[in-house]
Image 1: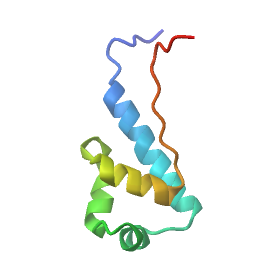
Image 2 (image 1 turned 90 degrees about the vertical axis):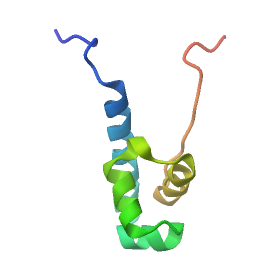
Image 3 (image 1 turned 135 degrees about the horizontal axis):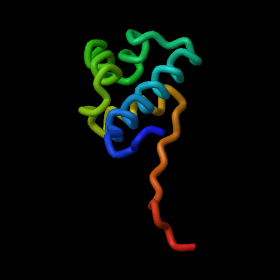
Length: 81
């Protein structure tokens, strides 16, 4: 039985975001060079955002998510019914 006390939620979330973006780009056969051209974000920055999503600006996240075909949603954990 593993403890969730030591679980790094930020890393887990960032890995998930990077995986979703990368998967979307692969599905659409987009290279980082093509993503860079379409988004207006320099290629090196696109690569850095995928490698280190924890430092990504929201503007870049939305731009990359749109290109990858990823939908971003937010919801309250304890939303009233």
